[in-house]
Image (cartoon, rainbow, N blue to C red; front, top):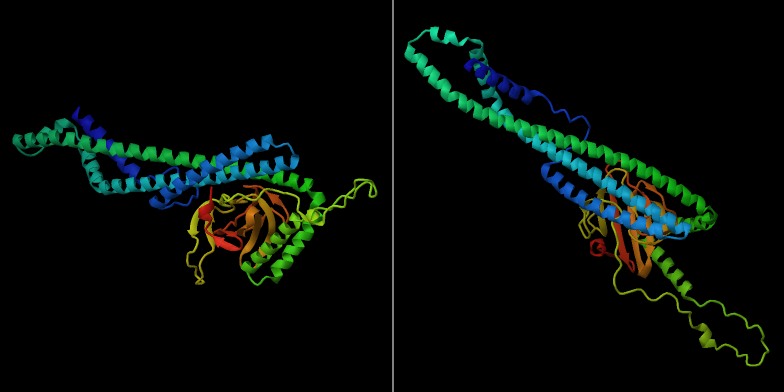
Length: 415
């Protein structure tokens, strides 16, 4: 019986030693591992942004169902798909963060087990040697009967201790298996999110194709506006000058839109009771849209990611930042921060591909650092409409918000 006990303990100890040397089976994909603190912060951020994106997608999907005009319906469908893409991107970031946390816990467990490995190996060798010797030979070993009694007493006291220690080790090994399952689940979620992301991007591409075909007849006007925007970009000395020029053009359009329309000619000029319209009355503009509310509009971030530079932060150039610098996932979806008109869309020196959107009330938003632009000058976009995608290597997207040409902190006006 004792020989069987020694053998089982030896085998259990050998299994522990073997578990310390076998690499983890789930570390098969090339997934970047973050530090535990960074991974926890990334998990919280990604989970929060995923929930918000899912809520936006549901709301836009309902609005698309309620829309009657084909153009509006397609625009809201595209915005809903873009929100679903951002939700999938956040789910991918959350899965990677969970994987990093599981890997960190696994590494800590391996360190604890490694500290016990050396004495455990020695114990395994001694127990295996003892287990291979028949118990009857222990009575024939050199020494007195008193020594044999001492040996049996030592073994009687050692076996419970061995059981206790191997029980703790077995618990830690079980924890290691749970960590492996957690990491494997994170990798499975990562694969599902990536598959959903590819499907949503394909769906968005199909919607954008439908939009281009539907608006082909208006392309001539868009081409002329695009040429004027490019001319403004060539004349502007810097990005601030370009935005000022766009703001001036927007103010001029608003003034022209506020002018009264033509006065209809009376059907009978010489008829009795005909009165020449009063000149002052004719000059009164027709009441148009009611003035904008004093409540400031709310915007959303164009991309989801870590904030790497805040508003007013000192840059390497020595100047203060006039917006937010965000680090999204490679190829992340960029969307319109609010409904408005695309005033500029294209490359601009030193800023990559940029999009400038005019909003009601003299507001202007600017998104820079895009790798691809899916909007054109003159497009009327809704909140969350796809604008383009970020780069594939170390992307950095800058979001600026201006009112009357003056930069403001976007964080004060976010949903």
